[in-house]
Image: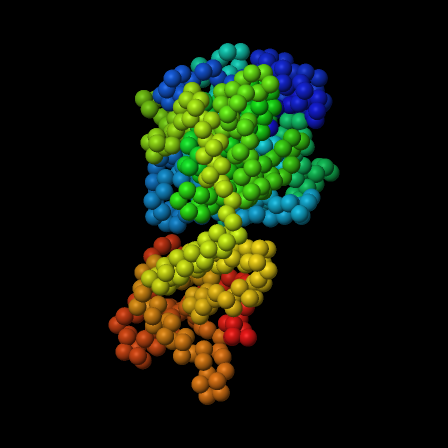
Length: 588
């Protein structure tokens, strides 16, 4: 939520409405809270930064780049958000052409969902890490979800990141360089992260045990309520956020940093132009944040955008994952359930609150993270040139509030007939792509995702079962080019297959599926690698057929067109679990 706690529950909510956030003195604390303060040497809440000015603070100088490499460093900076690099990563392929800001959106768009452990009727997301781990989301408040995701990604890939606030009228910064006052000195008694905690990033390898930090593992967020019981017991008590951070960060400094950042920074600071900027409604991306603000100070609500599904040029659906106070597993919502947030008047909409303040002036609405860029030795929290046309100046209140009406159209729910037509169009588009590039695993997955959409709308709105949907709409090519498991299939690394190869594979299967001797049906043979070895690339079956019909010169040999570690370890590609009925059952 908004401001961080001195007291749990309702007492906290009532208390922080009138907090000035200027005192470094603690209110009544439990022994555990006192121990927490002693460990991290700082407590909030902190005020917003003052007005960012006519230019929305775009060029305002901030922290010194020289702070990056002293003892207060949390993680080093080796990349910039605007950089375009070739390596594959969490959802993006090699030579993707994406900068790191875009890769952040791709990562979030690709996160999978799972039932919440304490309520399997609700969903949360699964966090994927660069270290090969997949783990349930942590238990957090709403603003904490947004800050956690952005700072985590920045730390994994050594990107610059900082949050800005105000303490007693002076600017303070918490980021990759530690917790600093405006003059570079440490904020109160905050840790020298680099010398106090260990970074195992360069020393760990996949064959080694995961390193742990006992102190981090035993701690939690200030105020509690962050238990992650699926990680077991720590010192006889349910594991908390510290144990979770110990599981996902090789750099243990980041875990301690996160306990500090999430405990004292909230949606008030995200509503501050110093940290995020307003963006136009039709520019929405995964990683953006919708802020609901119904008062100038006090609690609000943060709605992180996790997925954007563009249905057509001027229409899309979104998925969001919201924490709450008290802390909980982020609640995953999509479709109409997610779209409702964007129609709320306190999302920077038209009108005024009970105090007579215009909602558009409270900081609510769709916002995007600023990126830290170092120029002339100083960091500036600004945005990339690619976002220049998407930016809305925070003082342009008319443009801020106009987004409400725009979201009404952009998030307008499709009718069942439109959903059905859209799914069929997506299936058609995926088939057309496969007819040109038959090895494409992405197109195979897009087709099956569209079939899942078609199953759902047909069953819920037209009483057509998935089996009957298959009989109405499945074609032989859907079985020949069945979906494959990307990380277990060398076909997925092959980008140079051709339309001629598509014709050859289809011709083989057309004669294969019909047994003319007894007029029975054979299941199609999927176009994928079989029995691959150092002497056989795995496609001899179709290559031999191409030669038998005089088209051998049109067959292109397999090539590793992108990073393909699976090609060294698997001899047979792996099909994904199929929802479709068997091909030979289509005619029943």
